[in-house]
Length: 445
Image (spheres, rainbow, N blue to C red):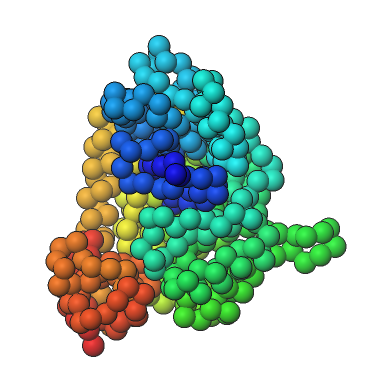
């Protein structure tokens, strides 16, 4: 009888993609995925370290999971991913944490999971947080265990070398390395043949994707990769995340404009509207250069939605810096934003050379102002869609009502409309009739 594995995933899309890789490796070694942690032989938390509150959520969950041991003293609890890489051995310090963790496994060591499980079963602790300069898991077919059967992720590269001063990713995920484009294309082909109709190409910075078989061979960059997939599968929607503004090339924008199945949606993190703050963040662009990229997107790709990340309260941020961020938001008219207040991360450049000198109450107030502005911008963006007709890819039933369906348009906006016997994976023309700041409502045309 196969053993059961429960996986809980925290953080970004990249982590969800990694969890699918973990599921594949463990399935090939006699495990099946369960949604019930109390019945599992092993419980894995795939973690994120990008912000302190993300780690605190994991610690809280780890304490809660200790109750499972009262029912099953042999259950194996493992911490995977970025948090495992950052904290390493301290996670195994039972006395300090007040809990028992059996395994600590970094994002480049998932192939070693079966052996690490055996080590724990033999009565030992298990840890592998060695970073790799080559590992991409290109030969592993992910198990889409939590997928809706319509949308899927494909990891095309790993690691990051941008070294933003607030970010732990370069130290937790290592150097950039890209997958062979043939393996990416093959995975896309498999997913399309299985009925998937939307793919998201993932990387810490997909714009810096590049592959060269040999020094004298052609260098395949991201625009060529996404064009190859788009041209071969015209009824397959393609998204990508995440883009760094300094690497969003004219060539890529032209490719997106040339293929209607490359979604009209670009996630382009700005972080701040202040050049002083951007410089301290080591973002390698100015607010003016960011807006130039945005202007070209608006010119070349009409009706393209642009979403962003905004980080308030970074070291040295003044009220004027904050006002400049609000001003940029107003000019950019972002459709949506992920908004956070700065939390110092040990081991980052920011923690080593800058003082975290913005008071917590000031960070909270600035974040509230940013959130309020973005809610207004999102509402305005959605109001502009009323009366327009979009092609919506059906993902499933609406959470609001079983009589309605939920899907997304090319702009990655959620659209709710009546169910007229459509099924997941269908494309439906929908006229937008109403909206909230988060959702569009419409009727089939």
